[in-house]
Image (cartoon, rainbow over all chains, first blue to last red; front, side):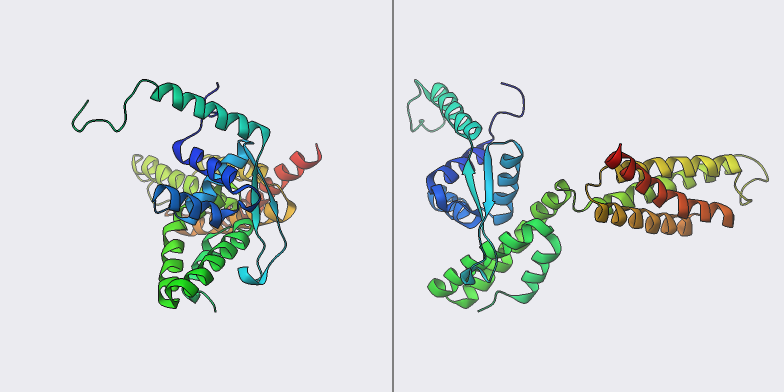
Length: 112
Length: 180
């Protein structure tokens, strides 16, 4: 695997959120999904910066929808995983599982 | 119900053309949701805080998408010109009776070539004609500023050459890349 193809932690979270939300994956829903599930205080700027980076890597694609009144008359940009993105998620999961294998959680306090 | 005006203005100022539409839409949607569930003050606070915390990332996004290329172009012309001016000042100060007199034409020619190369590189990064025009204008403005801030005496011919050649080289390289 070439350098730059591996996923960062937040990139992985964003990809999983896009995957979970399916057709409803747009910036604010992705932000809320990550915030609710991980209890992290995530900003919309960080989410869009990551979505942009994942788009540049070819892991997700986006499309614009029509403006709606509940969005103040603004359009929505929805995201979907591409085939490359799905392969990247599968690979990251495999790597993570391989690293976690044999470890007992939660780790005891003070262990090194 | 509208989000706080100052935060909206800040968002429009920092987000690029592409991002401002859907980022503002997303924030507006969440603002309405928060106003309905937690009240308007909480919604406004949340909106403003999101915008403030996203300023750096949205600006970085704008830079990466090439929208702030005119700012980079301006800096990449003004900074080398000012640094070269400082360098020639130092060189002149080492020559007795030369300090404060008009600059040697050779030095000015080096300035001109360096700045034209910088402007041409910036012009080559433009993707549309409008962006190329914007970059050329930014290079001309920053060259004017750098010439004004330069400490040494410069002839009118040098100033005119600089103001003509810098934007021209930026536009020429853009045209060359587009049509060749």
